Image (tube, rainbow, N blue to C red; front, side, top):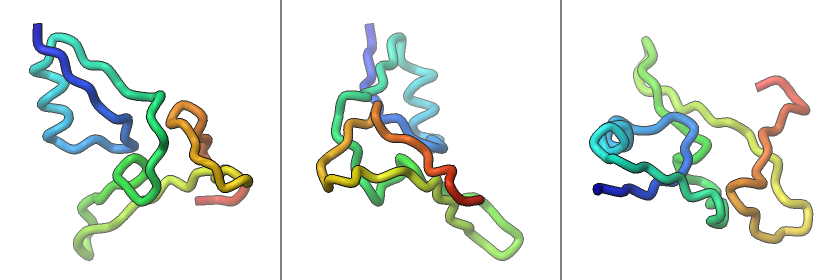
Length: 80
């Protein structure tokens, strides 16, 4: 049985989607510490002017402590 461990991302890459399709069992790691400035909340898309970076804003911990991936919330206090 082929297992794969993945980190949840906003818009997974083609490589990630291919790995999920080939695996018999895919598990998403949500107990890990959330890492800022990664593809977990970012994606590049094709645009008429070239590549366009999309970011999903998240609510950061006010105490400056690390957050678990499962505890991260989307910031909806302003239009994005």
